[in-house]
Length: 180
Image (tube, rainbow, N blue to C red; front, side, top):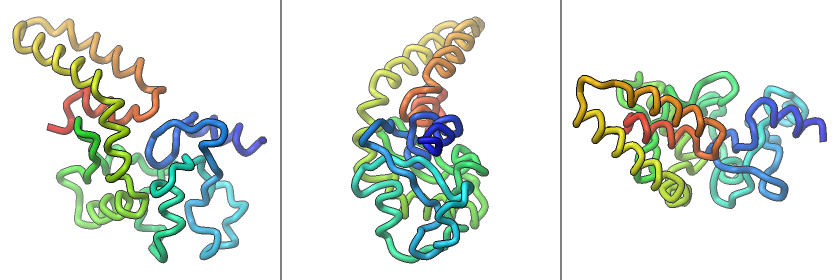
């Protein structure tokens, strides 16, 4: 299907909302603005994303949460969710510190409406286990050899090598110790 080819080019094989894996049978074309409340956006390209079919989260949760202002949600094709959201080694997600009041509200509402902090936590935590150990090795090396920054290049390579994986943002946050 041509739409999926374009969506895959735009966002890869990961859910636009949770960054989790999508495959045949585990994905659907998601309307950022709900079709029932915004029917004129049904075929509007800027309103379409690929979303996982995971019950109770992402697009499935958004479509069942009732009325909300779509302008409140972080729109992943024009805004970098990384600016708003922080993933922890425990698999949770929260608004980043230091956001303006409006952006904090948007991060909180995006997490709430898409149910990004709930059932997904355990899935992300399982994906992060090995990367937590990797981060600890890098941290130990940096502490043991404070004048040797050769480990930085290896860390950067690890981050690049994981950029295509499901939950890549959470992996990057853990590897670069952003959650501390």
